[in-house]
Image 1 (cartoon, rainbow, N blue to C red):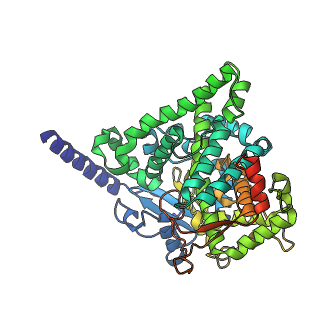
Image 2: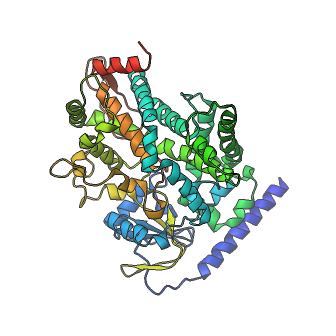
Image 3: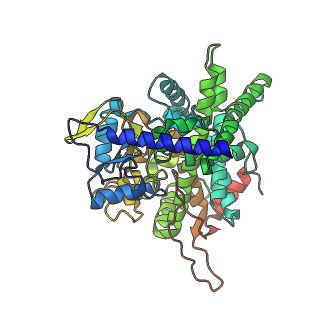
Length: 509
């Protein structure tokens, strides 16, 4: 007890000293920083944030206090929030040499997540990761996986038809099993698969640890990183568990593919392709990290996007009917849509663009950091500043998306019904040198799922005992990645010929 009291007293004294030193040091810049709300000494704007939905706070600051580029400070950490796509393109795309770094997230290393491609600083290691991603997930390479996309999407149709509870369960089974198949050739399905279970556990913890706002306390007080895990509470106390999970998930599925290749039983996968082409000097540790990040990085965002899509179909039956009419016009009534039909289905692609705009799955995107001082619009942006693109604000920009809260796929179509911009340029995938390297895989997996679902099934409101519709409200979880709260629904087969074809293909007859 005595040692704990001494530790507590010493910690308080150190914190007080650091606060005093920070308050006594004034930084002088050649130009003003972007405008932002006045904060408290040292704490800055930390107490003004909606910590569960900070993107709403940043949007409110734009509307009622400042503008579309905002300066904030949390525990002495400078942050720039961008609420405009044109500003994001100007800075992150056109000045990518300055804005392609990531902020140091101390909790990443503390949790054993230093291999995380998303958070790597800009440099040689990141370039190695992205080179492998490009080789195995570029647009041309993704063509070879279309059969795999279709097979998993067809399984999803029947999983949804049997669903009675939270749609998160069958959707996540689809995204996780598909990504696992593409990455490792691992064919297990369902939430009981041990690899999937441990990966989801790692994801759930990591999402709580890796936000810049949450990690700022460790940047402000570096000595906290040296404290044992038992000194922390909540998600911080689980960092020991992530240090156990990471090496297991990095090594076990990778080593399984190596063993399968040795005995000639390996399925086609990204890891198998890498190992078959690798020379003796190939960096297997890098490939392990890329493989696991390809898997982890796609599960939550793809699951969330499909979940949002199904909610939109319940709330906007006219959109659902138009998609189905387009499919039925292009594809014969007893055939399933295929990738060959995609150029003739522009409205379906517009729906996918609108799903990502309507409720972007990562509302604040992934934070960037500046490697040099910069000037924009007469404002000074210091080296080392954390830069965040508020994708929620971009999605609600009434100048670009009138009546922004309404789900309207025609926003993304030209007057003659063609897609205005390519899907992979969507702001939801990030910017410039940090754009999502798996975006081709994501758009293929989402398109196949959406096409298969609406070619066979209709989704509608659930009904109460009196036959009245049970209303669905767009309510969402919080955190780095958001998804709809569970809602009630009903599925029915609207094309029995296609259902029969699927059953025959899957040997379900």
